[in-house]
Image (cartoon, rainbow, N blue to C red; front, side, top):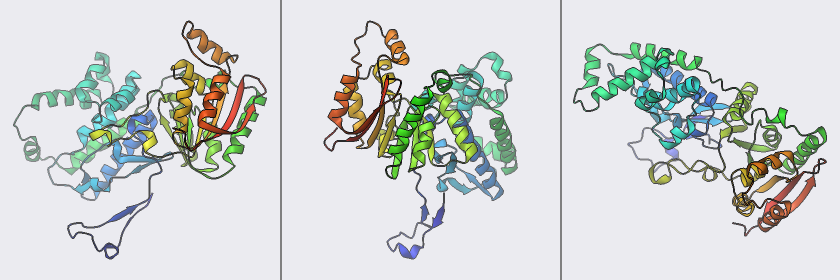
Length: 413
């Protein structure tokens, strides 16, 4: 992503107090750390640390260290807060250390050491995870794991000790000879720690879905061909692939789209997808962790600092493949309400209905025995037809699944 200075003469109304005006390339879609996978947060942490080291070499520093300053262009992390750079004042500590720990290091430690998802914790507090909170989630034997004693226990103890103190800690640090060399040493140690952190969760409910619940060859080929025909029918600005799993259809859509957001509630499949996109250098697909039945809300001041996904970019094509039954049966979302939600952006929709005779649906229904769930193809099509103009549909050879391509009606809401 490029940043360039704008000629001041081109902006005559510019106030003299501003030193310069910068023009940045636009980030396709803003995302937040509670929507990233473990590896994405780790990569962003390394970007933050590398920039801090580079700034110190130039007599500068970064006045904060929040992952909200890092955005993604596909699999490429991009630092966006130029205003975070400031001249380093001799004797001052690294102002961003505590924030780095609370919003980068502690979430990564909890995932790596305890397999504890950081997403609900970070969504619950935009300030991140405090040292004390992190400490309570670690066991006694975790004290001997790298980084815990220094960055969690010691920091928690120091914060508690000086919480109500009037002591000038910065003055004490200057008197003790604290300087850029010590900060550099500590940042390098932090970088080595973060680089070594790994998340090894094993399998998840959906990470082996393709191998364990594979379509037969005819169904799979016809499904891919259907999605490919719709995707190739025009150039799409933004595609949402909802319930993307390993990203097969995200990749097909990306061949005919400027950008694809690949969303799945399964953290592991999103982490796997990110790693494969990163290895390929693929910058047109953004994988995000997200639950459609419990999506990222508006957060921060007046609920507008961090916006819901629909407010960050309206798609013109939505893929909802092998998804509807999980929401309608597994999460009790009525089919009419689900179709109305799909229609809100006014996008084309490629959707798959998996019928009650399908083994996956039969299993879901067994698990909901005794609950009144209106799940039938007739109900699905009636809801679809109220909100959309159907363009085409295609039953798959297995006889239990049907694909639809539809366009939202102008009056749908």
